[in-house]
Image (cartoon, rainbow, N blue to C red; front, side, top):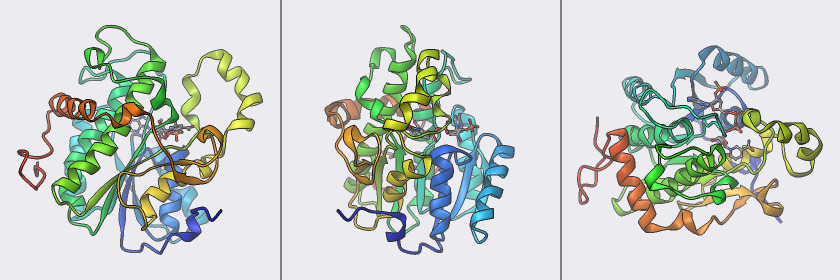
Length: 313
Ligand SMILES: NC(=O)c1ccc[n+]([C@@H]2O[C@H](COP(=O)([O-])OP(=O)(O)OC[C@H]3O[C@@H](n4cnc5c(N)ncnc54)[C@H](OP(=O)(O)O)[C@@H]3O)[C@@H](O)[C@H]2O)c1
């Protein structure tokens, strides 16, 4: 079969992308892949010294890479707002937004905004970031928003009565909920953009099981077994970034595709269009989640249902 690979991507000089969590893992490899085809990448990271080391490492293999660092903490709504403000002051367009940063199975923690950490960093922060950046995305030809989901989206559901762990916390369930929310968001955003006539699409991607730092909060027994088991059902971060890169760069996609690995159970393999759980396509759930998310982050994407333009703030 003729699978998509980075070598199939056209040169994208002149394009600009933001990758959140670009200093390591899937975000790092995504940054490297985008830079290799001429995209200028804003590495949006919470620790600028780690980001600088990652930038230097990429420059060693791609000396012509156009990379810039900007600080963002996705778990802080005020940090997301100031990032978006600074970006819009500096750049007048955005071609690709990659909502990549994430944490998995963290011990219970509330953010400064009173949100559960996994929901905040993985979902709410990116929901707000995307909305705030629509005015610059809108200025590019066929711009794209790519949101990272996970096989874990199948483990759970959106618990509207416990979205922020007011009634209890299970770290696995909350990771699943956050990644299902990211996927619902990616699909629903595309529908809204099409309906409102934007020259912009939203996609989702997942890296299967990739060797990154994400597993740091796994239970001890899982960490103990992973060196033995991981080689059988996991892939490198470089391969794991290919679904994201395809969602960013493949000109034949139409919008709202979900890209993941081709192999058995989507653990590893080539980047292909994959299907997702029925929960991720539930229209009522999507509308309810969107409305609640706008209230929680205190930002309205579109001024009213008929308004074709995003709010500029
Ligand atoms: N690896 C997998 O098998 C797998 C599977 C399914 C989905 N995913 C998804 O892929 C994405 C990337 O994960 P990864 O595997 O590359 O994990 P990773 O190696 O742990 O990288 C996560 C990145 O997110 C950043 N980050 C975490 N919290 C942040 C915050 N509050 N603000 C800003 N940046 C933050 C991290 O920054 P620091 O370095 O400063 O911590 C790091 O750059 C995530 O969305 C994850 O859910 C991964």
